[in-house]
Image (cartoon, rainbow, N blue to C red; front, side, top):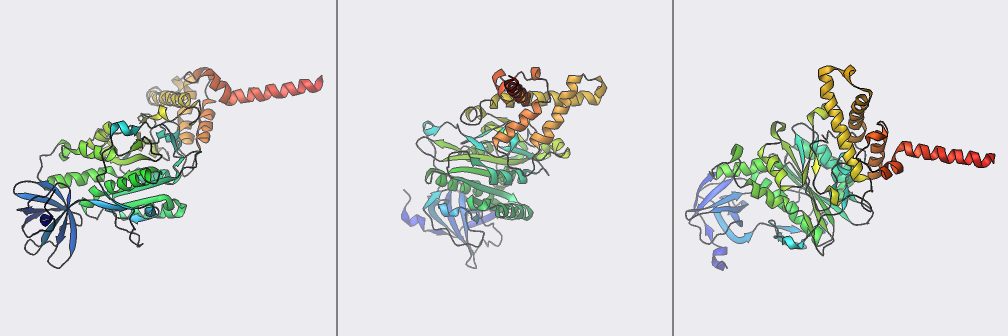
Length: 480
C-alpha cells in the first residue's frame, strides 16, 4: 500500500517533453498505469498516465497533449489510482470522447460505478462457449460467416473501401432473434476524420439506432494518447452493460490501424527498440488485451461480441496489424477492391472470409437445418466460377462447356444478388431464399454438398414438382 502522503505529493521535476510524453525525475512509489494530474503555469489541469518507471524517471503520457507545457512552472501530482471511467446504463444514446467525457453537449453521467478501464481478468474456466446466432442483416455474414454471440470477428478493409458504411449498417441492424432480449451497441471510433464522424452521427440519428448506441469518438486531430484509451473505455462500458444489466452488447472498433499507429508513435517517443515495420514488439500482447475482452460468462445472461474494423495498408493482409489480429480473433471478413469496382455493396470477398465459430451458432433451432450445407455449396460453386473467370481471360468463353457457363453465370449472380444488398436489412430466411434461387440455376446433381432431404425440402424445382403433383391429384379427383 502506497503511503498516503505520496498520493498528494507534487513534483516540479519535469526534465523534458517528447511528443505526448513528459519525463518526471525523482518520483518515489509511483506505479504503472497510475493517473497523474498535471497543472500548467496558467492553472490549466491536464490528465496523464504513468507509462514507464525507472530509477531516474517516471514517463507520463498526457491525454490532452503536451503543447504549452513549461518545464519550469508545471507540476505533476501522482494520485495513486489507475485510469477509471464512470459507467451507467444512461450512457446509451450518448456521444463521448475517447476517455468518456460527454461530447454531445449533454449533462455529465451520474455513475452507477467507476471502473478501471483495463477491466478485470476473466478466469478461463468461467467463460461460457459462444453458441447463439446474431443476425446482422448482411447475407455475406449471416449466410457464409455467421457471427456468434461472444465472438470476435474482424473486418479487414482497404483504403477507400466502404468499411464505415458497413460498420454503421451492422450497428443499426444487429439483433438477437426471437428471445426478446435487450441488445446494445458500443461504437468506438478512433482517429476518424470530421467527415466520417458526421456520417456516423447522422446515420445513427436518421435511423434511430443512436438510442441503443454508446458512441465513443476520437477524431484524427484529438490527442494520440486518447486513442489508446478509447477502446478500453468502450469495453469497460460494454462489460458493465453486459454483466450488470444483462444486455447483449456488440462492440464495433474502427479503425484499429489508427490505434496501432498511435501505439507506434508512443513507442517511438519512449525510444523503444522497434519490431516489424516500426511497431512495438509488445503489440500482439496489447491487441490481445483488447480483443480477449469479448465473450460470455457462466451464470451471466449478458454477452460481449466484438467486430474490430481495420484498414490494411496497401491492401496487404500480411501487414503486422491484420496479421496479429487474425491470430487473436476467430476469423475475418475481407472487403475486396475488385468486387467494389464491380459494384458490390458491401464488397465482401467471400473466399478469404472465415468464421471459426460459425458451426456453434447455426443449425436447427438457431438458423435452419440446411445452413451448413447451403454455405458450403455457395463457397464451392462461387470458387469454381471465379476460377473459370481466370480461364476465360486466357482461352475465351467459347472453350467452356455448357456446365462451365452455368457456373460462370452463377458467380456473377452470386455477387449481384447475394453479396450486394445496399441498405437492405435481410432476415436469415431471405438470405436462404436467395441462395436457393441461385442453386436453381445449376443442375441438381451439382449440389453435392447439401443433403438430399434438404434439396427435396427447399429447392425451388422440388416445390414446383410438388405443386404440380398436388394440382394433378386435384384434377384426377375431380374427374373421378
